[in-house]
Structures are given as C-alpha cells and as structure tokens.
Image (cartoon, rainbow, N blue to C red; front, side, top):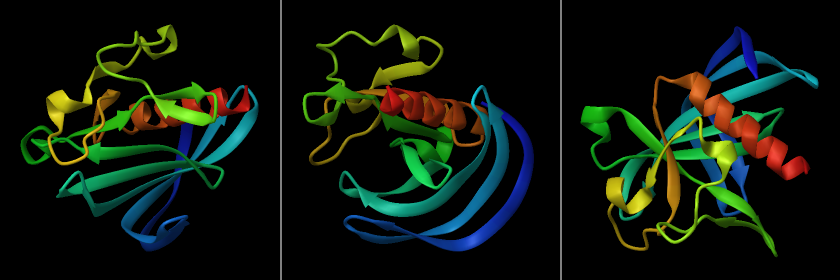
Length: 154
C-alpha cells in the first residue's frame, strides 16, 4: 500500500469495539493506493490498560475495519516502539503465532519480529511472536495492516 496524501487529523474519535467503546486521543487519516485501488487508512492513538499497565495503543483501520493493533513496549517512553502480535488463520478464525515454538511465516520477513515476552511483561502476557515498529513509522504500521487485510481475504 502506498500513501498518497494525509486527508485529515482528528481528535477524540470513538470506535465501538465488541467489549465497548474506545476513545482515541487523535488519529491521522491517509489516502492510499494498492493493487486493488484506493483505500482510506486511519491510524488512531490512545492509552489503555494492557497486560497490567497503561500503555499506548495504536490501531490501524483500512476502509473502516481494524486490521492491526499495536501496544507500547515496556520501554516505550525511551524507545518509541510498539508491538503487534502476529495472528495467523486457525481452525476457528485467527490465533496468535506461538513464541518460540512456531516458525515465523515467510510473508513476515520484511518486518522486525521478536518474542512479545522479551519486550512486554505483565499478567496474562501472550507467548506470541510480534512485529516491532517505531510509533512514527506509519509505513510499517500500514504495511502490517495491509498484510492482515490480505490474509483475511484469502
């Protein structure tokens, strides 16, 4: 997916998740283009209690559907890095890719991938592989969302 232009910057947008509404402090809307045409991409930023700690949460929507979510690493304040658990198609929808037992699919080779427990500690932490990106690297955030969109369409 290629970013064409920034369309809008908004404050205090709400998204209705199944577990309830989440208010995003701000978001950036992009116009993008891919092989199948133009798409609207939104990246939203908020803070949320995740794994026992209030963390930055970043969500990437393509055409109004959330395709990727990231959470702040334990050292986010110094590194600026966010992580997104790798999810793969399973028998009943998506499931996390288990770290360190399962190999990382080749399609993730272009991303920086680490074991989530190496960068995030807390109660209930998933033993999952995760994509790491700097919060300012919107290209990587969008690329992961685009990959997940393609995986869901298959």
